[in-house]
Length: 549
Image 1 (cartoon, rainbow, N blue to C red):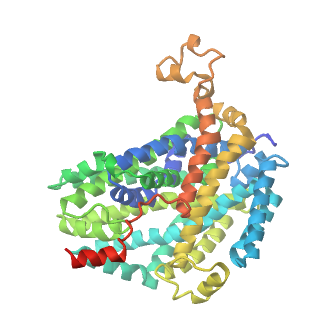
Image 2 (cartoon, helix red, strand yellow; image 1 turned 60 degrees about the vertical axis):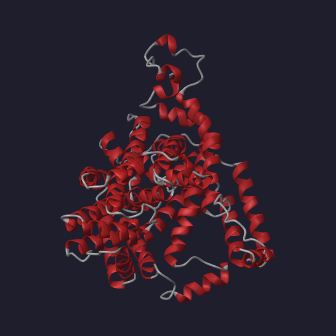
Image 3 (cartoon, rainbow, N blue to C red; image 1 turned 180 degrees about the vertical axis):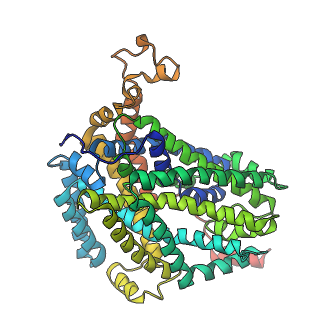
């Protein structure tokens, strides 16, 4: 296992630059768009509390893992796993053998597509071992940005539509019809997608300090300012208190096992974990900076923004008599109708979609940086070349997503090939890209990162890295820390073992991988706790009821 001295590398100017950039990576459409609507679908305040618990016990430990890996190696995800991996790993070989045997079994049953994929993956595991986890992060960043930029392009287009006064809907049905026509219009969809990608490429091409950090210091305060303005406007609407009560008052009767799994999955994905972004950003962090406090700041900022988004949306939705459980259509269909009924609605609609655009941009630049950093570090490409070439390829893949967001009619040849190889496929090419990355690459990436740190690289090596800049993490008794006695030598003797580090080690070895695995099984549909509808009565009973009411 290599413990080489980290190479010289461009770094953030300080902790603030890193926290704002990393928080920007975590704060995206998932916070402003997805979190409010899944909260509305799962009962409001009680779901928020479950989500916060999942963030604390799962999100934060895994984030510390990723940042520690990046800072220790000073390399991209592929290079980081290559440097820290042992020459041979029985666990990796065991996983590879299981995948190979599963693929061979599927071929025996003539499941050609999945059988071939699993055999190829099994061979790659034997060839690259744990380094393949880093490759998964790069592939995830590439595929996610291809469809994420399409959705972000919609927000850009809706800013223009809001300013020109075209979002003047009196009913949600009108907004729904307009949105359907907007996203299926190739000129709008492709044009907005390309414009958004050009913004991302221009920022990432500027480098770590002059590009990503500089713009993060501009965009993050702007995001917060826009959100505060929307909250003030929402809370001053007549009838908004009903939305506040729904959002903040827990009703645990609405919480089910399904709700907990949804909260667990979103807590993990909303922090940009499992895709290599935090490893990449951590690789630009100097060893003098406090990794623990930075991770905590990122998690807190990401969570606060998500909570604020709900506070900006639910009071306005309730004030105008709409339901909170509108699902994914809450942002692009319900809210434009809400804004139309407000005084100065055009202004507030434009501000809201500008907020969405800023959130999407801060996340998108981190996804592009994951891919770019691989080619800079491992292929020795200049930053400008890596950014423009890979950004261009992602843009081309995104064009396919943009023209197929509704169905396969424009990519019928590809649809036929996928059906032949894999049987039934998702509703569109856009959905396939979303499904592969969100349901497979991200949870598997997070699961294997936890296993790697907990059992392969080792908690001891990780803690030694975290100690640089955050000594209290490993050497202060947890009870002393909570009691305010962390600086008292008599309460920090060597025999104490219940430290933050030991607690984190337990989580990362046992609790985090188990929880992420459960979330993964839920996202792919193998673990479903949705209540089943009651079975219909026997036909004879129905007839009897009709005859004898």
